[in-house]
Image (cartoon, rainbow, N blue to C red; front, side, top):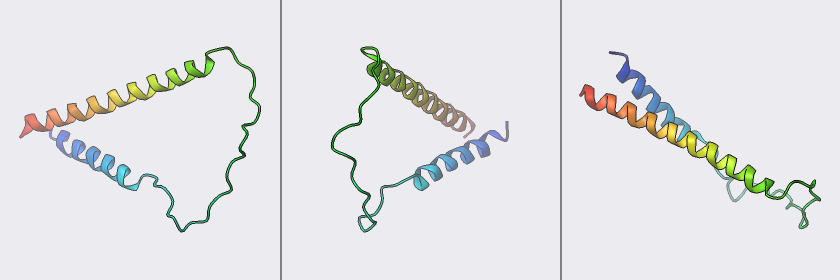
Length: 84
């Protein structure tokens, strides 16, 4: 159990590093890419409601991922708090 605190600190440091180093928007002085065409290309036909279903599935995946991350961070904080 002595490795819990250093591992938790390392995990928190990695999360902060990833947030700081993460992708950012380009600076205003960078060259601009040509804009996309104003009309969308023709789409393949699909079943009615397929787009909403796909978006709902994506939202569910992102929500469950966020729940796992937050509960993990709370668990680590709880372990660290109990060790103080």
